[in-house]
Length: 358
Image (cartoon, rainbow, N blue to C red; front, side, top):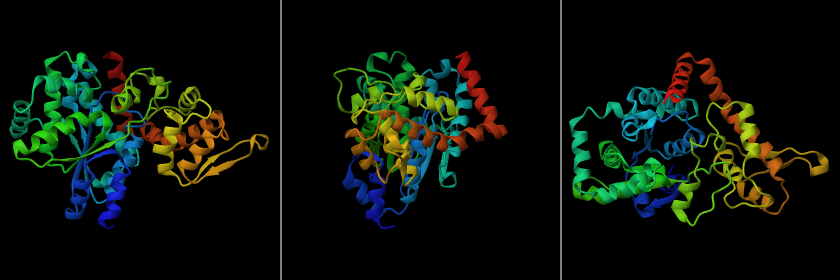
């Protein structure tokens, strides 16, 4: 694959790329650049952290990029997940890696890392300290967004350390690309700012879209990135997201309740599932309907489906039925993995128990 095709493939992931010119140059001059993404182990991951992440990582791998997936257990500890119980967090980290492996991610080409395997290195903490020395408390508070917290919600001193650690991770892993969600943008831009001061290369920042929660979008005055963060899928609202081990009935129930007004395509979470997940995994999207309601209809791309929905040619219930069927098709092997594989089952049960007692 030539550099232009590699660029277009990687570009398809990014809602924002800082900068496209740097990305082009990187792919022209480096046959095997390194990218990473990381997640706090904080319970049962949802579909955006599982299936969608596998889709995007596989695209990066196809473009010849080496990918590092990071279970950021110490970061979750600083952010008081599971009540600040590191043992529970680390179990959740092992579970998170098992989920990624079950999601269709090309695991043979991915390097899985846990923070617990990094923090014993004194050189890592030197990087953390140097990042802190080249920033301010105010800047760290603004980065609270990366922890899923508003600036005024950053209350513990440990939470101020978190952005310093995440920035240091970028240098520790020697990454060329940070490939995280738009909600992680602030710390990635911090890394670009301090990298030259510390003698490290500036990473190219590829920020992917954050999948909407299934509920009705809140009314607010927020726009742009902040609006996207406000609406993103959240495990704290379990009925508005699909978890990787949800039952078939759970998926149907949640999609059936999802916000999906007739003809509305803006901020429509059901259509987002089609755009960012379903059309990435299938070539033809089929909606089966009785003949009296127009009969079965097929779409070869998302643009055609969106246009038909906007014109009122597809009823929300018909769209929801099709989306539920496809999601269950994708989740079924993951669900079965955690039912049949003894190691996976033990981790799943341990995370469920930890969540109940936290």
